[in-house]
Length: 162
Image (cartoon, rainbow, N blue to C red; front, side, top):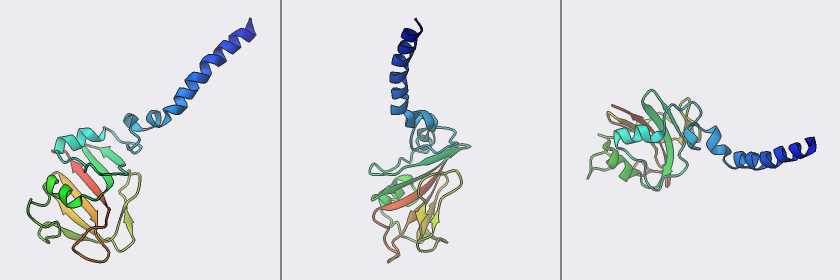
């Protein structure tokens, strides 16, 4: 009797263990989201949706960290000027490189920055910074000219809910 019970338990355990292995990324990340960094408090959509500043459609490599009503996100995109206009940090019809809306950030060539808690890759210098009441953005600038971004460029965005 015991061997049949052991075989039955084994036959049930293998498929369950296999399914656990298959979905392990979803089980071990906050909210079942592989992009969420350890310690995140809410899903990214809860913060980004609240400030109406969606991440560009072509964005890749999108880790995020959420805490106290804010989110820090890093992503790579070829659509940085469009993103800056949609977030409202640069008015429509204005250059993303206008000194009135952007500032050089003290991050030298090749240096990287990634805030505490945020996992993934940080932005590489040189960097431009943009700020509004709900969004702060650091974007990788071209190391060769002040009037273009890297292609594609990594952005480090901090979303703050009102």
